[in-house]
Amino acid sequence: MPTRPYPRHFSGPEELADFDFERDIGAPGHFPFTRGVQPDMYRGRPWTMRQYAGFATAAESNRRFRYLLARGVTGLSVAFDLPTQIGYDSDHPLAAGEVGRVGVAVDSIEDMATLFDAIPLERVSTSMTINATAIILLALYAAVAKRQGAALQMLSGTLQNDILKEYVARGTYIYPPRPSLRIATDVMAFCAREMPQWNPISISGYHIREAGATAVQEVAFTLAHAGVYVQAAIDTGLDVNTFGQRISFFFNAHNNFLEEIAKFRAARRMWARIMRDRFGATHPRAQQLRFHAQTAGSTLTAQQPDNNIVRVALQALAAVLGGTQSLHCNGRDEALALPSEDSATIALRTQQLLLHESGVANTVDPVAGAYTIETLTSRIERDATELLARIDAAGGALVAVETGSIQRQIQDAAYRAQQAVDAGEAVVVGVNRFVERDRAAVQGSSPKSQIPNPKTFHLDPEMERQQVERVRAVRAGRSQQDAREALARVAHAAQDGSNLVPPIIAAVEKHATLGEIADALRRVFGEYRER
Image 1 (cartoon, rainbow, N blue to C red):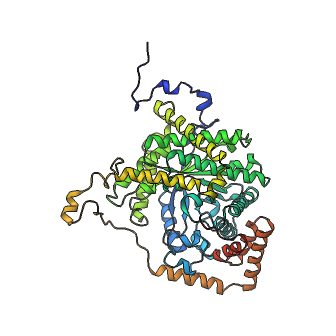
Image 2 (cartoon, rainbow, N blue to C red):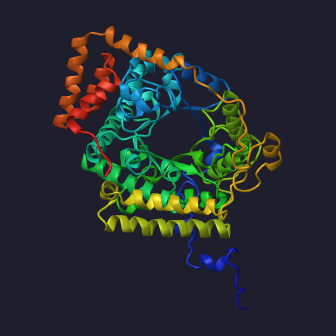
């Protein structure tokens, strides 16, 4: 009997004619890990529920951390303010107006100690979203752990430390790409030796997607960057089967529900093959792509903000069905301000409902074998592999970053996506369709300009002045000679190529500030200026 031709929106078995079960899916927890990195997935260990938090001063953020822990968060995720991200102390002229705005201000060991006051670091997993100054924040965290009497070998968590995506997507870089890559591999080498339970790098597709990339570009560019880090680590003498087990990834859970599930599965399968075939990894854990997911901030709308609760729930479900190891859900009001405590609680409850009430965690990879899911997974893998090949043919990912090739591709994709929204081809509920016209008319405003004004979180304007006084008091109360000598040792290590982490830990213990350490490295490495 002839096969009935399926319409384009309908997937059938003929689309999987070249599909091989053992090669392309396999059993959960086994190569190529398409179905997940653990044989029993969430039946044995639920994903870690993280809530990304941090604002104002260390004391304010510490209160939010303890609030979240009391409500069932199983891992902390720290947001740092912009001056901290780009290596300026809070009293630097360029920091004015930005202190504590998009994250917590951390200038010194005293701030880090306050941030984790009454939180035993040996018993909590901490993720830190920081890149250009990641090595300094890791040193501060290690120094505070030592103050608490914790063994570095017992610390668990993740440092983002992915500087390449800063050049292509976010812009919070300091040094040129090659010295920045050296800093990242110094962290990887130190953690392999001193902090074996810590993930020293989390290669981030999240920000690439937030900048406007497609799902295929998110996978391809993220894995291209990951390949640069792996090769750099191998070149420094690290064993791929050892450090490969501590590499983690960070992906975006976006709006297209089925495509997102397939994206996670495709990325996992691709990375397993890259690690085995390109880098010679033989240990199963070194072949696994383990990832954190966050729902897509760029999809949140200021109009009808309660719609964001539904968006986040669907995105979170896609991440869970895609096999994430940890998850953050955005707050409904984040298009308007930092999330309020109520919004953060709803975001956390979304995860708890998925785990405990939906039943999706009771079956390992319940979507496996679905024609559409498997077709999408294979299509994303094929297209991302082709894009990776083009990057390699043009000189590799580092060259693509330095020449701006990846940046241009992301910008083009973002432009096309915005054109679709502007033309009404892509529907954004509450923005270009289903606008609340009646309410807008009553309030005397146009439908497009009508944005509700719910109760949102506000920062205390005195916070910045207090933080400036705090960092100045730290400098005034230390031994200036000890601090100068410690900073000189940091600069010397930058020049002679020795590992930078130990002298930076010693410097923060002598109360050298984040900005002073970043400046010591600036004088050696210079600063990057975008082409």
